[in-house]
Length: 382
Image (cartoon, rainbow, N blue to C red; front, side, top):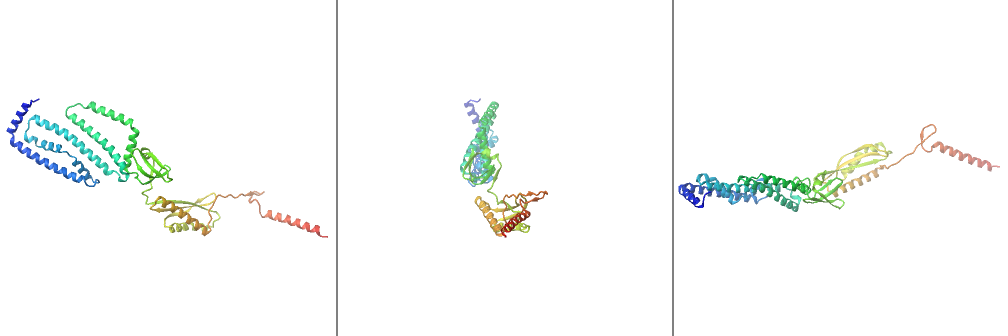
């Protein structure tokens, strides 16, 4: 290692021998620095605009470029032309490696966070997104700068094998200890970025229909249509089949109708057209209607219609109005709805199925009454 006196002598000899090259190199370094700084300022101006463009994400990363990095880049580019002493060139290379490594980590962090913010759903909620971004920023920063520190130490000749192994074992232990928390956290990030549903939407899962009130980092809060507030963990919610009712352009309504078997066939034939008139009269979209089977006590019909732009209240009120209109029309046409009925038959002595009584029973009964009346008249006569 050189002494300070020897270093001063080397610098003096270097300046005296290569003063022209040094002057040209310094001028070129200044120009390179100002050019890079101009690009940095341009990136800063781009980063101040709307955060929904890939160019703006890159501009924000460029704006995070440090002045020290620009100076070392300029010095590293002209160092070979100036022919500096070995100790000075080695110092510049070491400083450049350290600063450049951490600068790349800083760029990577800004690009990752910018892409995440760009893809995040603004409807998710400011609090949820802010909390998520805070955790993501911490995790990304720790991860990238840990990698940068390991790269720097490795370039400085330090054996980092044990350090990498220790960090890996520590990360596994933390992950196993906080497995449930991380599961819900990553589920929340999946909801924010994949957008299976958004805050304010009406969704259905299992047997529950509810409106999403808030998407948190651990759980999602919903308001059921019956008024109860439901809280479910994000990981558990994403494991279910979710139906979003918010994006429906129209919603299907089905009616099952049953009329009595005594309905004349010509009337039964006109029922589909009658149902179409009722649906269109209520301003809804008729799909189809017709007989679908013979029930135990009824002729079974099915009606399908669509409700355009369905809101929850509109959907239920539309179903109510259509059902009431069908009831009024059937009453006006004299069509009776079926209800469970039974008719009993009795077997005659010869095996025929007859009603519990028949005309012959009435005839025999009347004949007996006539005989009794005639006998009374005979007794009264002299």
